[in-house]
Length: 217
Image (cartoon, rainbow, N blue to C red; front, side, top):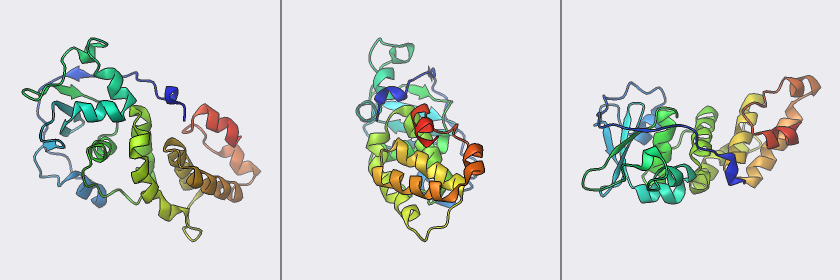
């Protein structure tokens, strides 16, 4: 995959405000994966962490080294004196807080926990997998997360798995983001078999990158 497909545009700011408890989660498996709603707002993903990340109503103590090694976004954002966000550097003694207000907080939490080798019950839901693909694509950490998604997407590859055309399209996007060649082939063939000419014309290709839109067309 071309790493230049994931530009970083959004600005983060420093803040020490603690989170309120998270609102009730609709998806039970995601709730189990990120912790109960009554758990403390701060989730410690690395006991020796040097950075706090805040997204929505979630807060995480993380390792900046882990993020920089696994994410193109954080590698750029955390390098010293490169951007405004990098002026206050990570430190274990008094970890600064970075606010990210633009990504899906639930999927962002799943991504952070996987990057820090935490146990996560990944959702067995097409839309949720699509949301995780979106956030990993944005933060440029799809390679580090790919092995986890490979296991989760496997049940959908089975011939007896009943899926709608929009679901197959979403899974095609997931396979593309995480460079899952076999899954991409399976869902491409399945989608082609499901659609007639009118359906192809009505297909929403907006969720796919331009290269993939051209290939699909």
